[in-house]
Length: 388
Image (cartoon, rainbow, N blue to C red):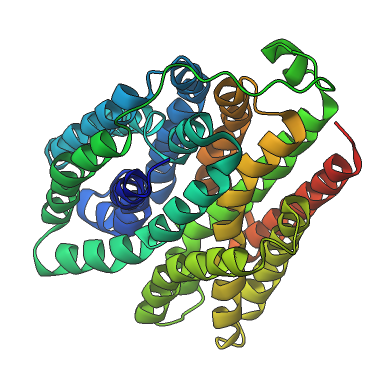
């Protein structure tokens, strides 16, 4: 895959993640205060958005397998940007919900799942380099979004912040994705291996390794998305300064980049499976440090490093581990099928945490999230012990 195309996709994904994903948690407290909608209602809206994205992920994967990635990625980005432009006019919760559902539909065709499926299809065994560089740059999405969105919302209005991010998608991200996917070859047939007979999509989906990896990554992302979306309210409830919370959220992005830089430095010495184990251990430790930061705020820095670097690495490791354990054949469809429960858990995570917060507070919610990610670590270990 040409280096220029990789950089186009990298900067395009940075703007898309900032606008179609991180903008919601960045403006959550503003919508709660300005519109008078309850936090549980707002997080449910985000849940529906991610749920629609999850349901559409397998279809996006199949379209990419059939060679339609060149139009799918930029068209989906354009749809998301235009819908974002309409968001300031949503003065009722049902209309607000409907627009975010459309944004979720758009995200299924242009965010990491679709982008990495396109890269694996385009680059095959050489996809690791492209995925690493794309996710390395896009790791700054939260760093770009949170301070910028909150600064614009405080200085001008939340509507101004939305329009700025929508404009960045329509006028910058869409052309970047169009150029980054140009020159897509005809449908590439994965190289044949005599010891690896042809298997259908259905056969792959029946394999225990598929389900072990699916459960492991789904529980991992439940932890991360829950904490990311609720980190500002968590720290606010614990009485920590709001500036500290914004800094913590903003620094998770650079820590994702740090994890990816470490991967680039040591990937020759560490297998993909071993790195995945490090990520799962890291995110479990991060939750424990976050719980401890309630009494010792300095530990929040350790949480940020572990949480950000673990998630930053897993976004690279996940497609590579799927290709390594399940093969490259039908990768778009298989990765899309695995993304369905993964994204459903992402969708349900903010609402689940809101319900746990209403029931027993954020401390109980964090202990539940820690238990789920520990279970995910167990599933990952079982999948790595299997040959197929």
